[in-house]
Image (cartoon, rainbow, N blue to C red; front, side, top):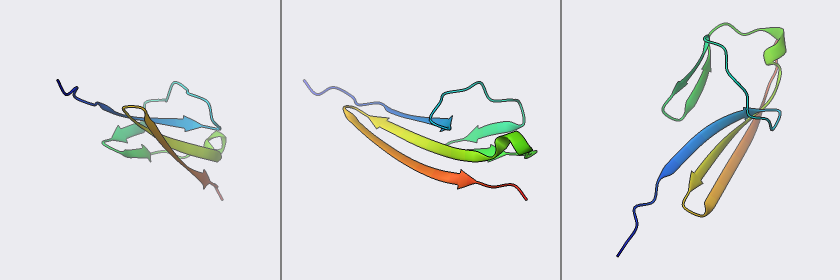
Length: 64
C-alpha cells in the first residue's frame, strides 16, 4: 500500500522558529512582510519537508 506523502513549508528567521506578528503573512510558499521594521533584518530560511526529504533555502533581508 502506498502512503500519501505530505508537504510542509515553514519559515525561520536566523535559523529559529518564531511567532510571527500579524503584519507578516504566509501565502502558499511565500512569506510577505507588509510593514518592514529594523528588527526584520537578518537571514530567512524556507524549509520544505516532503516525506524523508528536507530542502532549505536561505536569503538575507536588509533594510535601508
